[in-house]
Structure formats: structure tokens, C-alpha cells
Amino acid sequence: MSATPCRSGRKARHVQRAAPPSVNPAPPGPSGGLYRPSTLADLHDFTRLQDTLDNVAWFTRCCIATDVLDPFNLDVTTAYALLKNTTKPVATAFTLAENVDPIVQMFDIAAGGVGQFSKRPFVKIHISPVISPISFGEDAVDVVYKCIEHNIPMSCITAAQTGATAPVTLAGFLGASFAAFILDNDIARCVALR
Image (cartoon, rainbow, N blue to C red; front, side, top):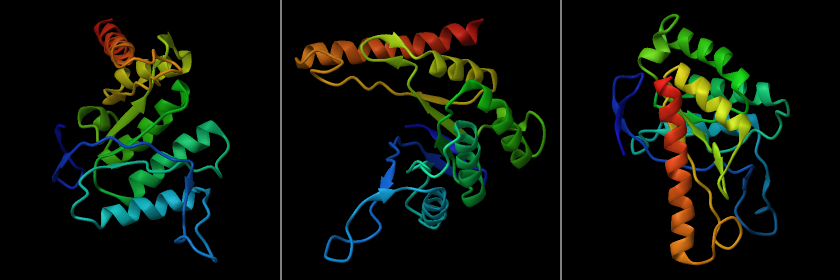
């Protein structure tokens, strides 16, 4: 975990979190307890909620706005929801590389001008450029290139599954996961050194 300055000037500790495509709005019982698809309104609400919590210093998009179907609109509206509703550092994801530039322009406006976001990024990206078993997701690799171009911190996620995309043994699973981790880092280093 590393400390990063927030837009508000506070320091925050980074944690990582997945984003489910559904929420459970009511406690279990006869009148509720069923999951429903999460919406953009849910993301706005959750982001505002965590912003009020002193024990939360850093926030990752906690749900996917399933009501926004277009990949570009999803990326932009997600970034906007995070930007609008908190001053804490945040993390999100980009679906396609061509979505990065317009979103960075929005971040530049929030940061005070052209190029300001890249000088002091307050958003990091979760990405999986290596897909188990050891293959590359072309769209994700292109997003990595764009993020490096804009100095956006990234968490490269490995998602090997024992017995499915990785060997069933613990040693085999760890080996496959470590190989994916090394490839994630090598991609980023090679691009950064170009």
C-alpha cells in the first residue's frame, strides 16, 4: 500500500476492490433481499456515501452502471461520478484506449488545466492486460499504452482460477499467477521505456 495525496490535500492509503454488476438494496425477508442490476445513480450514491466516511481514505468504483450500455458513455459517466462526488483518490477502469484521452481532458479541467492531471494523478486504473492462461487482451494492452502516455497509475489484475485457467495444484496456480504478474509488469515497463 502506498500513500497518495488527495485532491483535498490529505494522504490516502490504496486498497483494491472489485466492482460487482448488482446491488442488494434491501435486507433479506418477505419484502426484499433480491439483487438488482446496479445503476449510475447507485454509483453516485455510493461515492457520496464513502466521501462522508473518515475511515475510507481511497475509493474504487464499487459497482458497474449497467444502465449505461455504450462503452464510451460508461467510462465517461463512471469517471464523472467519481470525480463529482468525492475529493479522495479513486480508481476506475477504461473499456477501450480511445476512451482515455477525453476522460483525461475532464480530469485536467478538475486538476486546473491542460497537463495538470498527469503531473499529479488522483485516479488509478484497474486493468487485466494478461488473461489467464497467459494470453494478452488486445483492448486491455492498448489501454495500458494510453495510461502510460498520460502517467496514470495502474493496478494490473491477475485473475487465474484454480482448475479452470490455471493448474489445480497450489504450486501450479501460484506459478501461473506469478507468470501473469511478471508479464503485466513487463508490458508496462516496455511501453514506458519506448
